[in-house]
Image 1 (cartoon, rainbow, N blue to C red):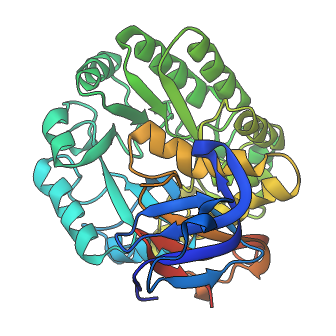
Image 2 (cartoon, one colour; image 1 turned 135 degrees about the horizontal axis):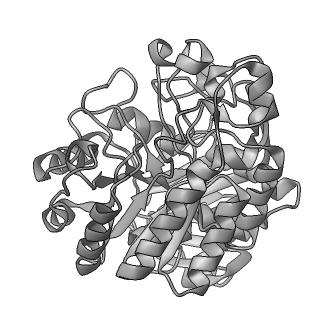
Length: 434
């Protein structure tokens, strides 16, 4: 849908959920002609309607701050056949995501100023949502030499990560965290010990039945506990990108109790799916970290509910038929998720496991806080990045309806209740269902 703009917009008769103000009430949102929120809440209608404003009756809908997805892989530059910045932005808008952080795993890797600036310029020209960049922690993501954090941050990088790769050199990590602390920058790492983690699915009885090599929990726990210790030592901001086992959530609690400035995320896949979903070698379920046991999935849901896990990410990772429709052990890791993250998360609301306020916080307010983004709130004066949600809209995920260039979703043919029906970015309606 083409962005539309008027002399302001008034959204009436909706339930407003704004975790940044702990607000959950029925009311009105008034958006000014400058794309910023003038008022949002039950008393907003007292301010009147701006001249020429578009008025929308939103009876039955929920308004939240626009969703913020902190871990998105995009093919551009280098693999535009899988995903471009433009196509990822359209998929994001359809999923209610108004801002996302793009990972540096491109070709070439986003490890210097010119490449970060290229992404920023392309996003300004072609994206319909806000695209932020996470720069490479090490040159070429090779894990050997640090990049120039200060210059990359000035160019627009909001975090530093080694992308899909872990970092095995503990001394390099200590230096990187010490360096990042001087710039108040976030270090975000995936957790996979390269020697223990060279299997293709969760280690256990099911892997044995399928005859596939397993990845033990320790392949995640060991690097996480090391990272948390070094974060405590250096007093750096550290974010564990995706945890998947109960012991990792416990390690996060322990590190925080020691005073470490640490946060963590979980993929929506690890809140929704378990190792049994792999079935008969279904390669769209080959992920990193691998899908774990049902006990671990439940532990992730409980850790999200109690705040031990800070944020939910889609871990959107587009792969084409050449890399995904292969024997399970040979297929690339990853699944797309921008368009299904919200609906999959709403399952946790519908079954009463996670309060809606907590879900919204984990997908909007909290990631904006962690990475210092101008997002995640509906307070007056904020940019009008808003997601309108029908909590009960039934729909079935069909491959031909997905806007991502790649179609490798583990939720194909899944039945959902609830989805984004409209997405506003800076006051512009960039997506509307139907």
